[in-house]
Amino acid sequence: FAMTAPNPLVRVLLAVTSLGRGTVELTDETLSVHLGIGWQSRMPRSSIVSAGRDPRHRISIGAHGWGGTWLVNTSGHDLVRLALHPDQRGRCLGIPVRVRTLRVSLAEPDAFLAALDAPAHAA
Image (cartoon, rainbow, N blue to C red; front, side, top):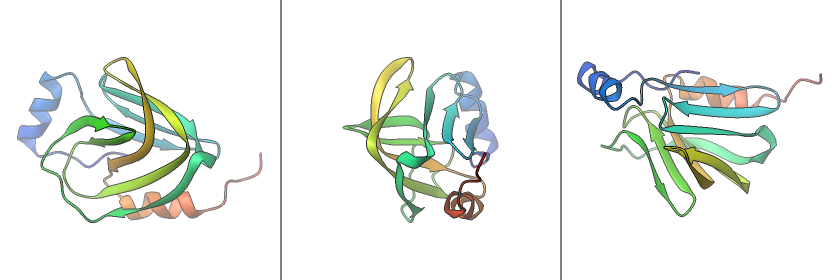
C-alpha cells in the first residue's frame, strides 16, 4: 500500500530531507512501514489489536512521536490508526523506538483496512 501522495511542494520537501516516499506492506504474517531513511518498522500482523480511520487531520508530515504513539505520514489526510499489543519496535532516524499506537497516511485507507480484516491465509 502506498502512503498518501503529497502535493508537489511537500514532495520536494520530502526529497530534500531524504524521507522520500512511504510504503506500507501487509503480508499474512507482517506489517512493514517505511518512510525513506526516516522511519522503519516491521511487526507481526498478530500484534495489531485494533485498526480504524483516524478522523483528525494533521498539518505535519514525516515521522514523529512520543511515549509509544507515532505518526508516520506524507499527508495530513487519510490516516489509519493502529493499536498494537504488545508494544512493537521501530526506528526513527536510526534510533530504536517503542510503538504502541501507529498512525499512517494511506492512499487507499479503506482497502488497507479491508485487507487487514481479511483472515490471513494458511501457508
